[in-house]
Length: 300
Image (cartoon, rainbow, N blue to C red; front, side):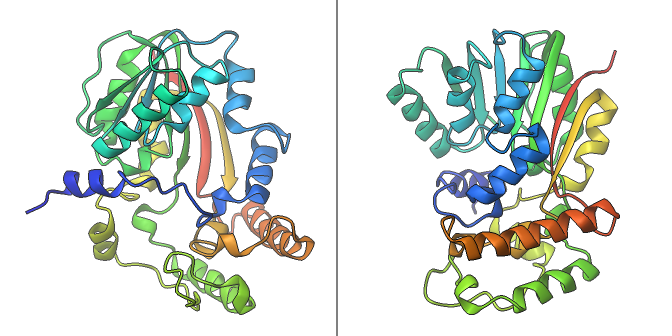
């Protein structure tokens, strides 16, 4: 029988960043996220972090849950690090990342390891920077991971993450489910074409998946996401925390975001209306941001 780790490894061997299935992949969303974090729609989260917190590239960076290695290559190219050690549970993803690094001429600056970061044991005072890009919400053993991250950072080292911190297992509260479902139902059918199935079907209703359904698809998905910041603060002092939304957009646009043409003024107005609604509800506490950037340093 296939184990949960084998299922997760196989699932993430496929590069799921292709297409535009998520609100995070749309140019409009990227510009609004950049604005919330850096104040500049064209300044990415990674470059904002570098400019604000790194006077010079870190000598040794650890990338947790590196997937297909996009951040690892950016870390070298953008000057965040001189050398990156990247780990991921998926052998297929690691093979893909290693090949991409080689193709980019970065093989000597990035090395890869297949490892389950739930069980990871890290050497003391080794890295100047530890980074997690959308990987911590796949970790069940948060206490061990954050303790190991604090242990492995050198004095003055930083932990940086860009992460989903919303409801665990995507268990959207009932009142928010009703709101998202209502917004979905008011969209014209052309915006609701299901890009996951890509068979002409439309996304007509927002149904919260059961925990059992979540585990069946990917046992690691959002396993303890709602607890991430609480556990992080037991081991780290959070020196910067930047929530950037998704309380509505994450689930509303899942599987349909690619239906909104980045070059269509009408489509962009629709996206802006939903984004503005989300932010307004977030500001009064009616909706909580499901995504955030955090910068932290180990507690004394």
